[in-house]
Image (tube, rainbow, N blue to C red):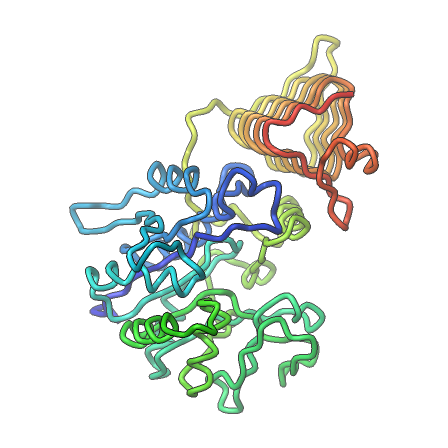
Length: 412
């Protein structure tokens, strides 16, 4: 293991249509999360904490803020030959952009040839979780198989949302890999659960190179890792799985040890934030033994003060970021991004704000997501009247979460 050369590839070119309007001006992996983080920080932090020091991030869709975040945040030691760098689509194989995640790797094989790794770890860039990839890599090597897929236990009722792994009777190879099946076979040890693919893979380098090259020649392929590459390995009996529940993370508890969240929809994204703010959170950002790294902004500490009428600010069960200022306002069960300003008698309840949001005096915001630089004028409301929200052009999800696009001014 110590002498094995390992190369990390983060697939960060996703468009994130289901997260619109949060992705109208940024790539999905660049969407803010938990106050000061970006979604991609979780994937890269897991790789770095696992000892990987040679990592490329393949980007494509509206990648400027993502590329800037990586360049400003993720600095490794060049003296030791370490790096984390974003690599945009470059049309190396003709006048076309990446047509899928497998094609992204195919068009980036020059990076593999330069690095000459023994093993390649391929991960998605838009899930919230902690994982020690060393344990998965060791399991991969011990299996002798050329491909290993990370599997997380999910309720049977949610199977149609994921790529589903049906294990073989031998307990380590994959019998079938099904994309969003309606009626999958439940796990033998729990009839209410299935194995869902986490979008994380470990490959022997030669096997992955051969697989993406063969896939690139197929006219009937979507050139997708989960939809095409993994099923090809499974059909030959060459794919194993790693049960995420068997992994362990320093500093974790039984409550948050196996937390994994696909935040691909607005409702899932909102619910993942609500997971953060409990006294005993389902996902604990405060685990210092396995930190989630991000850019540390040059901002003052958060501040909560009385207003001109001597009204106290109230902050209950919430996360507040650097630069937040609450002046006689009320914040409950919310996550406030950097430089959020909540004015006198304003209420923010069960909501998420991004950088630079201003909630004016007497305004009401509930069950909402406010993107960067949204201004809620004094006395205005968001999330109170859904019909009014829709008339204003805001997005209202099936569960009743109102999402306000970047740079919007909400009037009374």
